[in-house]
Image (tube, rainbow, N blue to C red; front, side):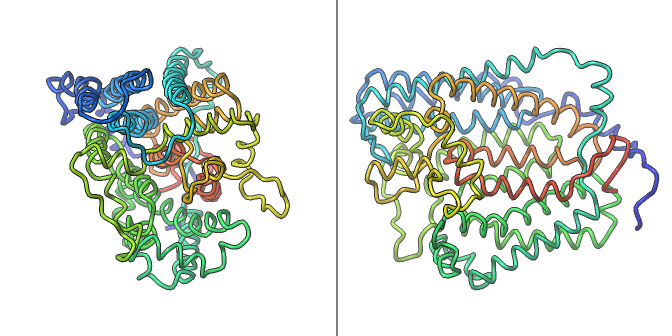
Length: 498
């Protein structure tokens, strides 16, 4: 159908549908709010803390317990809020599990997945800085609540928003099939994607993109092979969920089905890191259920259970049968102490590394993340991943280590700069969450990009918060290019996707 020459009003049924969702019924009643809050903030942290282990009950332990309880209280507030706060919810979910419960279990057992090479005081200081950063994040949220009132002219300007252009969406879909097709053929066919991540890495090396600046080559190949396909699927899903016109078009449904099949190959949990698959799941979940407060609350609550019981064992497909070694444990705490939750320890190692001589870098590491695409042949002194740099200084064999956003900000700008950065993140998250809840969900057209971008960023924030930023920058830049391709600036009354 050719596009209309005059702006078409948004369907009245959509307006009434969004208007009714002001106090949605949820699966978590008020009777469960107190047990939930106490469970996250008090019972679970104390249950972990009283377990037997070889860990010392010193200042670092008590600070870690305080951090866990603080994050648990804030996560409970995110679950029980009457308005969906995707960015803030994902932030506190990450902090609670990766910086709270898991490091608390490590402190109790006296075991860590990555050695902490410095003195105990550096670990204590790292935990204190994480807690300070969390408080700064909340201060930024409070500042966003008390922003100045919007002027009339600015209010009229806000009636315009970024939409997805239908013709350009078709172009993005073609690009997705082309890039993913090249990615599949480079690695030897679809069967490789259902073997193991080890086979994927071997296929990338055989494709000849790991020579020289290998991380950049791998990032581009994997990024272009996965990101356009995911974005096209999210945009088509949003279109189908919110538009009766789209659900009546066989070509739209067929394209969506083909994109599902493509993503099943390139974005499946077997061939991708767990944090990326978590991004895919969060983005799809909140795109399929754009107004369900019940789904939002259940997702955050169940994510804690999954992080505790499933995530530590979810690397089954990282290695092939010969190299896979299952975890043998007699306690539910041990997987969290032996697996991937090394963020607090790596922050402490970053502090020790800086104090051993290099000091702070005053924006150099951040510049390397922003200009990640510049080859080392052009920029010989291009910074390495912060996690890789600290890992090499430690002398570890595996340098694929995390570098949480606290460490990235601290090593560049010190404690004050870290606090300011986390405060800015809180301010931005609160503003975007409010705009998403009041505009993108309830009273916008099918092609609103904000309705797709916010769930995607909420999922990808787990990778950004875990770090290193240099590794995470590639997919961010590719996603920005894809969104720029489909974006068009329209008023609320014009509909780009019918």
